[in-house]
Image 1 (spheres, rainbow, N blue to C red):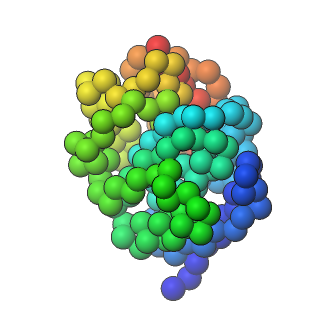
Image 2: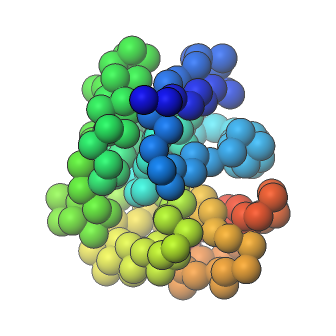
Length: 183
């Protein structure tokens, strides 16, 4: 199986190379997008985060390396879950994370904590998943006051997510990245 490599760019394990299977449709957040995001949000000390459409989990992993207290990773593809678990073990971060091998909607039934940061990078062929998940998180009162939301969407998509204010945004290639805040 072909593999891809991603690198931790900030924090405790800066420079660590992570391996993942090169699965069809896998679209990890670009290094440039991660660089912009984590320069926008430099400190994540004690954050509780949700990486809702995790894929490789690179956003949640980077958050843990920047001091996040806990990250919930949600992913449907078993090979990615196995690699993510392996990487978390290698980096001694497994105790600070929970893996949900399911859809975000299914995992939502098990969530009980309030999130300080959400990473929403839904499959580009189904952007409405982000809005649906957001609505459910609001309904279940799982969003902390002033929660930050990273959203990555195609450049031609409309910005979803009600009850948020836009703090920052940037176009990188064919995508828009946003840093939003729950208001």
